[in-house]
Length: 135
Image (cartoon, rainbow, N blue to C red; front, side, top):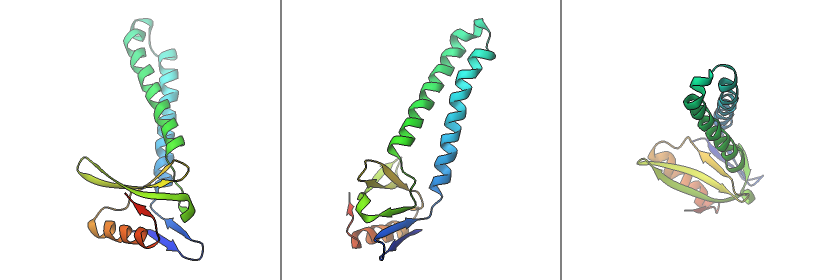
């Protein structure tokens, strides 16, 4: 587990490379959005524009929605003060446990490195000891 508690600063440090992953996701969404605008304008013929253009419009709208969601609801901060953290959230998606920190500004900070039971127990114990609610 790569979560460390800093007692002096009353903060936690998370080293999991999430900032790089989310940057790559945002770049891919931007490229898809640009492609969904340029491809129908310059490549498709008028015959193909009816159905292929519709597909590209859907892809562009999905990219815009996902980009807004990434910017507004996700956080990639590697250093969080305890005063910024509201609770630790545990979700089960497709039979696999996922953990994230709910921040007081409404964003979520995903914890991607907790893969085995020992990491999960260690993280829950850490957050319990420093006074963060677990839900």
